[in-house]
Length: 194
Image (cartoon, rainbow, N blue to C red):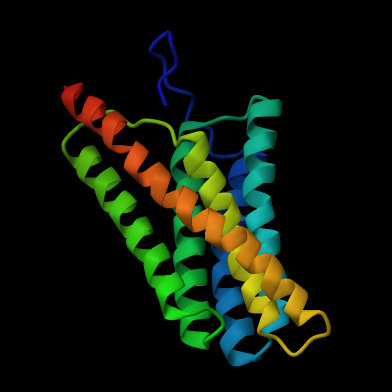
């Protein structure tokens, strides 16, 4: 993101928010190992929920303590996309979520990611994620661990499943709405490319 003065934030790789993002990347294989090698759906669900929560924490920390960095603006969404992609595919393969839900999530993520890459390759300036996009992603980041936990052999699994759908259905609708709302800023970014 470019500030109003036209300045980019500093690169600053060694910040606490970047450490959170890097930690999320390192924990993705641990999530897959818990789910498939240990057959521990509940443990994998807890880890995934914690990783989703750190996304909010690192963003808050970056803004609150002036640790926004150019690297963070790349690393944080990359960690989010990888974590979301892995969670969706893994829970789908595991059978914890229905195919229609996983496919709808993956198609939306794929379209937004491809559009962002295409705009970047064409030299269009980046634009920030909308409030709707953040809200949809936030809800989905909790829907998947809740649905995974609901598929585990634990007491209260039905409650976890219900909460998962309470987050999941609105999260999916909002994320698709946000994807459509990105068309106008994407056109403007494409038109403003140098």
